[in-house]
Length: 155
Image (tube, rainbow, N blue to C red):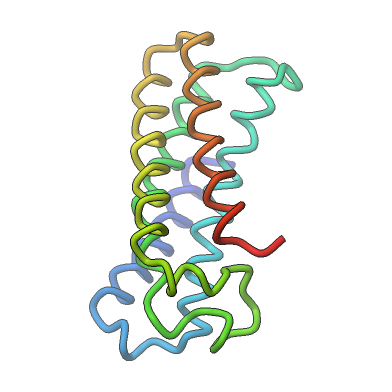
C-alpha cells in the first residue's frame, strides 16, 4: 500500500472517528459498524504482512514492519470508538461483534487496552529493526487479538 493511500485511509477513518465522538448519538448504528469494520480492515491490512514476515513466508523487511506496526498502533487507538451502545448485534445484523461487548464492558475494555498496549510495544520494538525482538512482540500482540476474538467476535 502506498504511503499516500494509507494516509487517505487513516485520515478517513480518523475523521469518521472524530465525527463519531462529536455526535455519536447522531450516527446511524450501521455507520458506526462501518467505521469499526474499516478500522479492523486497516489493522488486518497492516498486521498480515508482519505475520507473513515473522513466519518466513515473505522476506523480512524491518522498514516495512516498522511502517505497518505504526498503522496497527494508530488504528488500535481508534478502535474503541467503534463500539458505542446501540451498535451491537441486537440492533445491527451486519456485525461480527458479539453482544458480550456491551454486556461485559469492563472485560471488553480490558481486552482492548491489552491490544493497544501490545500494539504500542510492537511499534516501538519495530523501530529497532531487531528481527528476533519483533517476532517475540508480534506474537504477544497477536495473542491479544486472538483472546479478544475468542470472547467478543463471532466466528
